[in-house]
Image 1: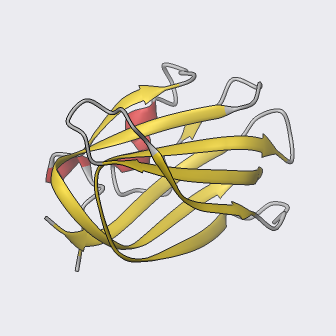
Image 2 (image 1 turned 120 degrees about the horizontal axis):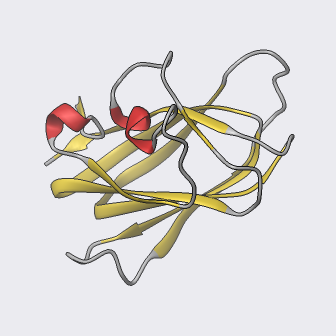
Length: 136
């Protein structure tokens, strides 16, 4: 399995609910946990990843900070519509450390993934890296 959520694999962030020029949403897919996207302080916050091709997903891993509740939805359309819920989780608070959470999926197919942060442990949250293991 390969990480299909890297910008080097053709994946793009096509929507982000907020943006700071110093911490752009593209940092989520650069493969580096030292770089990150930061929210602007209100909830919900969301971002959408678009893959270069339809991906058969086995595992999603997210590295983030101060996220309390996250919902993941998928779309198989070409234009990021008709999303379906595939995972939802409340994260444990890890004061001073990155949160790392896995979502096992049994080969679900998607062209887009929408990540919706419905609440956080603070006003601001950051997403450092999203890994999507699967095949194109």
